[in-house]
Length: 304
Length: 304
Image (tube, rainbow over all chains, first blue to last red; front, side, top):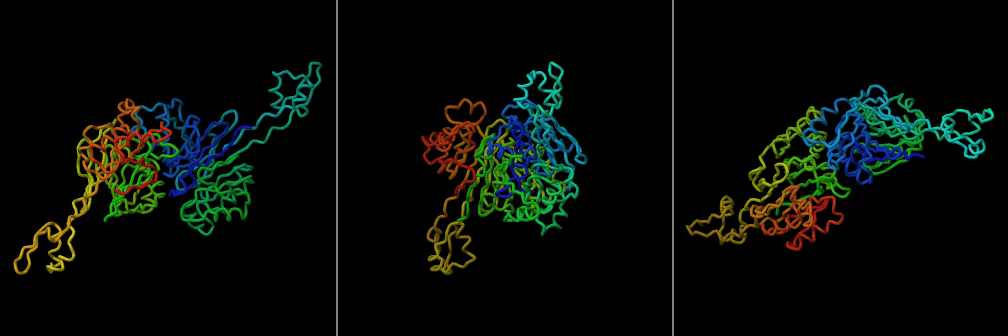
C-alpha cells in the first residue's frame, strides 16, 4: 500500500508560541511531498522531521494570512541554495504573486528553478492536482480573507487479482490489466469467466481533508463525507464561541461537529489560540461528541 | 551595574539545520532590547527565550541576505497583532525598503505602529544609535553584498563618590554630580579638595562587537580594540580557507586572529556552515591561538 501520511510541522494560531510554530504541514503520498500551508520556520521544521527538499513538488496555500505563508521565502531561498532545477508549483489565491514576486526579485535574482503560480479562486471547489494515484481538490471555506481547505483523495484502485485463479485459467500477462479494471476473461475455448471469480475488491481509497482557517460551516461535513482523517482548526473552545464567530474561526466542538457530519474516521485538532495554557480543553470538548479525536502537535506525523 | 547581555537566537549559516536557526541575536542593555539580524524564526526563538516584545526598539541588520532578515515580516506582523504603538527603528542598508515595504503593504494594511527605516551605508563607520548609557556604531565589513558589523559600547561612566569623604566634607547634593564628572570641591572656607580624594574610578566601559558576514579583514581587530566580547563569524575551518575566500566568509582561525589583534577578552564563534557535523573543529582551531573562545549555540546567552 502506498505511503499516505501527514506531517504536522506547526499547528499554532496567528501568534506562534514557544511550543507551536505557525501553520504548516506536509502530506507524503507515495514519497511525493505536498506542502500544505507554509508558516514561518517551515524549512527548519522540515529538516527536523528529516524530510527531503527535492521531493517537494506542489505547495498549497489555504489563504494569504502571514501565519500561513511567511515560510515561503525561506523555502524558495533554500531550494535555490541547494540548486533545485525542477519547477515548484504554488497553488494559492492569485494575490500571492503580489507578496512573493518582490521577494524573489530581491533575494533570488537568478533563481535556479521556476516558481509556477497555479492560482485558483477559493470560492469554488476545483481539482488542483491529479496523477494516476491521487487527486487534490480545493474546499471552499469562510474566513476573514478568501480561504480554502484541501482534500487529498486516492483514486479508485484497480482490483486485486487472485493469484491461484490467474494460474488456473492461464491468464496471459497482457490481459491482466483489463481484469484488474473489472473486465471478464474469455478462455481460449470461449468460456467466459466473470470478473468476480478472478479478483478481490481493492482497498477503499483513503482521503485526508485539511480545513483551516474557517468559521464553522454547517454543510462542510457533507463535502468531505467518509474522509479518513480530518484536520479541522479549533482556534477556540465553546466558552469563547462568540470570539470564534467574530474572528471567523471555529471551536473544538464545531470541529467535532464537522467530523461527525462527515462520518470521518479520525479528527485532528490544531491552530490553537495561544490564550489556552492547557490544550486538553480542546480535546475533551471535541471528544464529548467525537471520541476518535487527537490533538496535533508540532513535529508529529499521522497515518491516513 | 546595568545588564549587558547577548542572546543568540540562531547561529547557523545560509542553510539552517535541525539544530541551528539562521542568524539572529538580541542585545539586552539595561532591559532595553536591540535586535541584531533577524533570520527566519526570530519570533519563535524570541518567545522561547522568554524575552518581551515590547522592549524591542531598534533592529540592526548587517546585510540583506535572506538568512539575516527573513524574520522581519513575522516580527512586524506579531508586533502588529499585539497592538504595538511605539515606532520600530530598523537600521539597515537602504535597499531594505524594497523588500519590506511590499510585505507591509500586503499583510499589514493598517499597521498599529510606524516602521522607521534608519538607513545607513555600510561602507563607513557611523554612530547609529546613542542614549545616555550606550552607543551603537557600524563596523564596515566585506561580503558579497554591502555588509556591516555593530559595536555596542558603553559610555564612560561617572566616577564613584567615596561616601565617607562626602560625609566628612559635607558635600551638598547639588555639587555631587560635578564631582562625579571629575571636578574638584571647594569647601565653605575656601579649601580645595582634589577630585581624586573624593572619588574612585568608574568600572571600565564594556563593549560587544558583532561581525558577520565578512571575509577575513586584516585590520578589523584595530577597530574594535579592547572589546570585551567579540562575535565573529566562522563559516569554515582552515582546511576550507579557499572556499571561505571565494564566498567572502571567514574561518575559525581567522576569527581568532581578529580577536587576538583586538585583544578581545572573549571570542564567540557562529554562522557555522552545515557541512561540519562536529562543531568542535571550529572551537579547537580558534582556541589554538585564542584560548578564551566559545561556541555560540541557539538559545544561549552571554554576559558582556
